[in-house]
Length: 196
Image 1: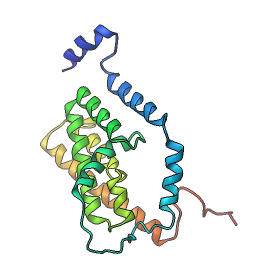
Image 2 (image 1 turned 30 degrees about the horizontal axis):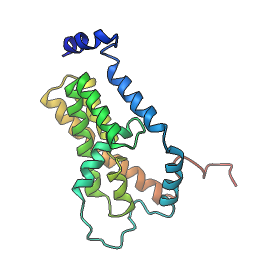
Image 3 (image 1 turned 90 degrees about the horizontal axis):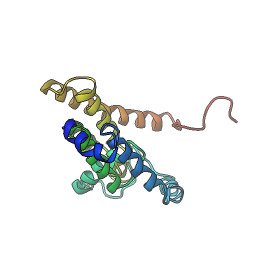
Image 4 (image 1 turned 45 degrees about the vertical axis):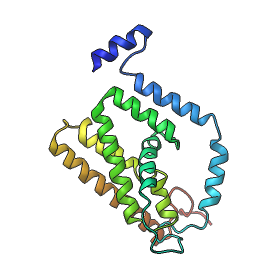
């Protein structure tokens, strides 16, 4: 695979090892060129007053929307790089497949596992919409890739370890969210010592 990439890309004087990262950075810059500041303001207004642990839905019987789980799984790959775009996430997956198909498999395994498990555990409403937006799946992609093929050889036992990493990641993230809401702490700002 590397030889084929080298033969093709060397004609254009592009290093085959850096090509996937070049695609990711290009996608990031095209995305950031747009409306990030406006979207951040809209997101902050939408999140004010939301209860992310218990949900704000009026219907407790609202089921998991599996098409949104699939989209959230795709968006999770982009969330690794801070990109909230399905098209850019697809480019990142294509670049990963070009670099190493095993990385593509572990990305998919981690994002689908994390997003599906978190969507099933989280209550309907604002909390579950985070899973649909890909915010709960990117840790699974990183954990599954690290355990499954970066720091060890890709074997059946590494796939099992990746599944354990994905599952424990969801429960750890859920526990941190619960601990923050239960103890009234604001994660990432305010409420520290010395403040009035």
